[in-house]
Length: 146
Image (cartoon, rainbow, N blue to C red):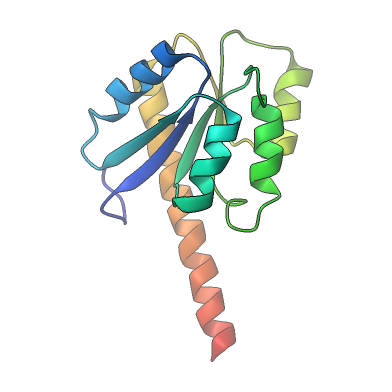
């Protein structure tokens, strides 16, 4: 994946170790992506306190903190609110369920089993959008600091 940054960091959140293993195998096939895998929402919040993350892939149904609750927490924090979240769900849910995720702040959904090419294309797109958005924010900050 070619972008503006040299490396990207993707946080993968799932309560199933096998799903995390699969995501890691896919993401490690891309040269400039580092993946961080955590087994649930609490661990994800701990990581977000100390590491910069460019994108989050998050399971919706988890026992400790579900994906929607986690997204609400992420979007309410000044440091993390701009990070794009792609929800990963086992089955296609109702439109109401999907809309709930978008209202919370998700940028997309991916269903399991994951289509590798589809997911990599979405990741590429959202990382580029996130990066461009950050450049605009930095330019605005520099402009107002003058």
